[in-house]
Image (cartoon, rainbow, N blue to C red; front, side):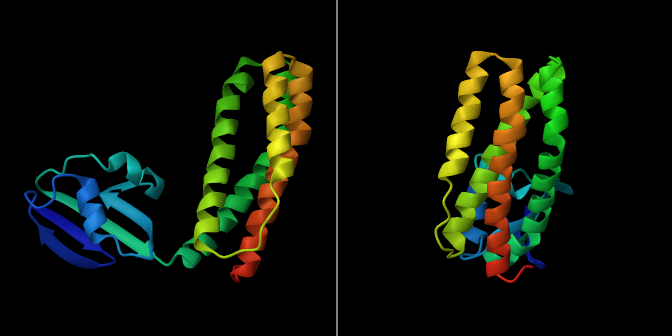
Length: 190
């Protein structure tokens, strides 16, 4: 037995009906809405992890709670936090660059996290473009600056890398912040 609760409405299902989480999700996820919250057996799962659960086999006595919302409402809910994160990152880049200049091994390990952050921002931007009609926004400068950072990383010059992170990465984050602010203004979130 699987207890499925979607937006407060409870349904009891047999594990014979749905073998994997992906099958269940595809059958019950409302069209034109996005997953806002997912809780499986009292464990909250970030909505962006749903794709990783697609092949997960459903077990007996599983409880799955899902909340869905309109895409625009979801964007209005998450973008202020994203903008706070981006602004915090911009403020931390000078310290991060200084740690790179000093050769701090932890700072070099953090480069992967920084790369993941940029990827997450780009994924969010692409998702927003799909759900909210917005005028074209030129990201060519961001791409150019990211390419410069990659080229500098290949040189293994700490000072040049620190400068690129402090200047180019700050510019990239500001470009994303500008885009997300325009989206919020367009859909009435600010």
